[in-house]
Length: 313
Image (cartoon, rainbow, N blue to C red; front, side):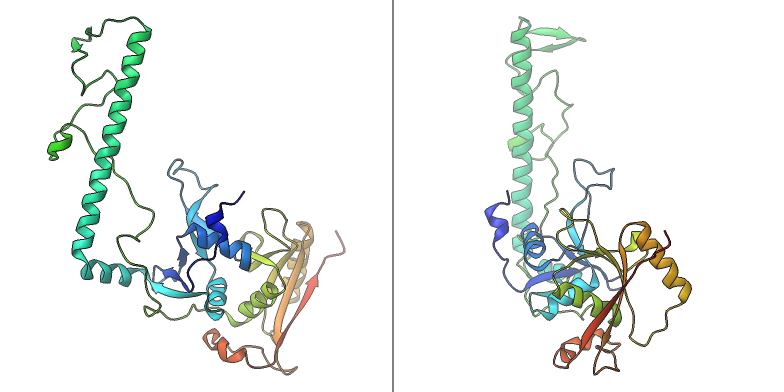
């Protein structure tokens, strides 16, 4: 059952973080936003974060979620999100509020010491339980070292102590922790911190927008050699029905590609779907510059799709 917090819409518009100007990648870090987009707007994205408990595997991944450029563009067009430059926001926040950052670091260090002290205390209690269960005298000698019941800071399961600069927690090494969010200590970025719109291929975006408006879910189709794997519902419940590839309306398609792609789709029990945008029956639906798509919304256009299936297998 989904938690009640994840059913509520996030504050709109929410930030999509762009982490690189060279290789444009668009990330979401908030799990409530990710859940809301998947449930309400058929936006899947791809999880790319490793799990802290299992960092050596890449089968099950977690936050952040990377959006396809087409997904990010669609969210911007609908006014649900805006692009935020992650690097510039962090630099500005650190320079504008050094006092708040210092206080945050001090609080995090105190919490780390409190966690370490709790772990040490838990180990001491476990040690006492074991000694009582074995009916061992509280003062025993193991490997030449004496453990006395009055020495509350040591047990046979403790790690060696290291000197610490904290007078209130002498002998305890603080636990290090990496917060999953920058807010706090930083404030949520405002819509004024904008970056250029994502660069997308006009033909692929037209097909993506058409299929999305028809209620389909789409994930990257690299594993099948296409642009999108198209699902009739959430991929957790359905297999994909189509392997989609966008083309310009007057673009020539090599016959060998058409045959190979059709055989590939049929071989994996899917249809190979090709589509293109038509406007005024003889022109493309959108221009080569996808950033002008907002102006194109006012013009009449539609997208036609064709499904290729191989009948010889």
